[in-house]
Image (cartoon, rainbow, N blue to C red; front, side):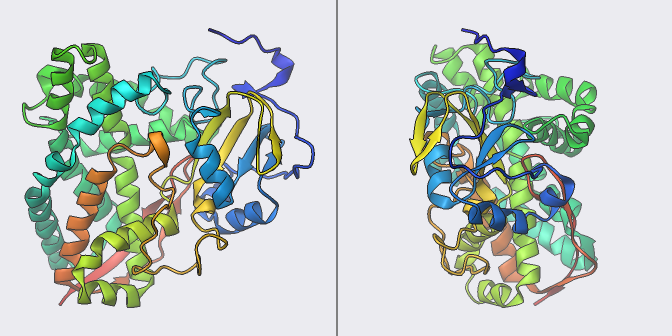
Length: 414
């Protein structure tokens, strides 16, 4: 069903709500390059201004404190994903690609597709990959130790996930550059029509047909996640077209976020050498180190929800149809929730961070990302004696992803 909205009440591609009573108005562009590259001051100011702020540039609400962000992000009945997790309201504008049938749908449809994805990437399926993940991680770290100095973004953060994850999906043709560019398209499309979005979308004519081709059943190996998804089509649980869309979802969300998370974790270890020493002394801290880096750097910095009804959160009135920018990066650094939030501490065990989402829309592939990171950080703990910056790190602005552009490092062996 379509919604008829007067054009004067729209901004961009969503309903332009007026500022609710009592909500501070903040004239900031959350998609400005400086904010995206170095968001810490923005996060702190967002939290300081109250539970919500109104951003007139986009006529939307934003939240960055942990309690309100978690509430909006997890309550799928009041704050839906089916109207888009970016600025575009799918009730008003057709998205650039068919919406994801796992990320951009709500129950009851969501329950059916998520069940298939959860089965494909079950703990047993991921456990079966542990040995191959570790072998690949050990080999990569050995090569980097031989190299000595390298850029950890292409040579490590991108190289590792694009070598192991596509094979786990069952891709028989792997093109790391196209996989990374497709992820950039998907996540930058969640923001406004800025240079970041336009530059990413310009790669579509080359990237999108290649991605769609890889999602076809005939292109997939018989023993990967993709084959399990297509088996659900054979049993009538989903349709063949839905199976292809779910494989597409793996390729759009399963690479870019892991690349960003791994890169951020390596940056944290380089910036906080005492934590690297802790990891070397106890490689079992590999998984907690990754979780803490996800909290500390929030690779997915923001996602939107749309209010499906008039409601309140912490006493703040939320109008129906309001777009709400859930600033996960700010919530994950909320000092009222996380003691010493501005400290990277691999012994913290930050249960409840929002980097993988929460509730029914929690990242369905998070166990795979954790397995990849665990293997890589275990290899580093066992083999690397020191990590030193070999130049200035550079953060890349992104409409939804906070990631490194360059991270020059030197590894020295134990």
